[in-house]
Length: 309
Ligand code: PMP
Image (tube, rainbow, N blue to C red; front, side, top):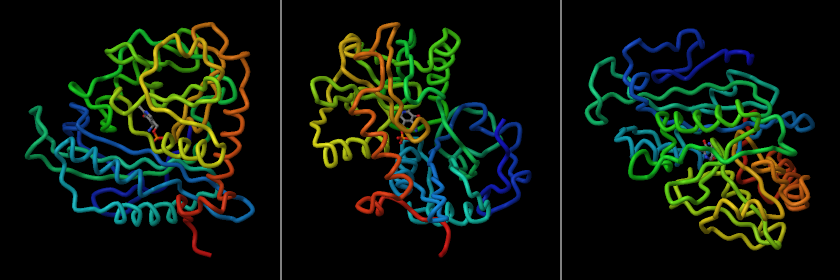
């Protein structure tokens, strides 16, 4: 069990966590009319500093989700960064931390709609370790579920309601003995994992589904595409991927803020490559963990140091 946060940003101010409460009729609780972000702050022991990864990009995506859900906020991404810094300084964690901003329809009223409602923002931060245990070698299955479609619930919005789809995929996979599920879209192409983006590597080329295949436009996905191209000299393609391409891939991995970079070493009981983490995933993990802990000077602009020095 994770410990609870000490504080929350709630209704415009930082309050003790226990005071951040919503009413039983809250719209978002009943209808899933909310959207969220998930950021990580990495603790660097030597520098005695916490680095939050690409906060402006996370908040831009959150405000895009707000647009899709017809929410109105006067916050800019920079305003949200300011709130994040205040909250993290109040919390004072000296360990890896997960930050969860949530925007939600706050009215306590019956009636399914998006317009004419009151929008609120809350934000909390908690110490956080791994999202999946087997980051060095996950066994995944193809889900019997399909990914939500842009014409029903847009995957591009990180909308709370769409996480029922993710939860169906995740629980089915775990209860069947796998670490994660891979989900196809209605075209039968690979979309992503339950809460992470997907890449495979074939003949030295990294391939990932395009945003039009009903994926969340992941921030980590963008980071790893850049790192693979600029630091590893790899070609990276965005194109539809068939289910059986992962059966014959040399390597495959998930990426995301939560999952970080997780090697997929088995799919549907078949080894990926030789069934162990391959050189591309290993190299990328090394680069990524150096980046997030502030050890790659060229990428300092993507990191926000939290504590004043
Ligand atoms: N896809 C889904 C469905 C997710 O929930 C997440 C986690 N936010 C991701 C992909 C990865 O996105 P990011 O790298 O921005 O965390």
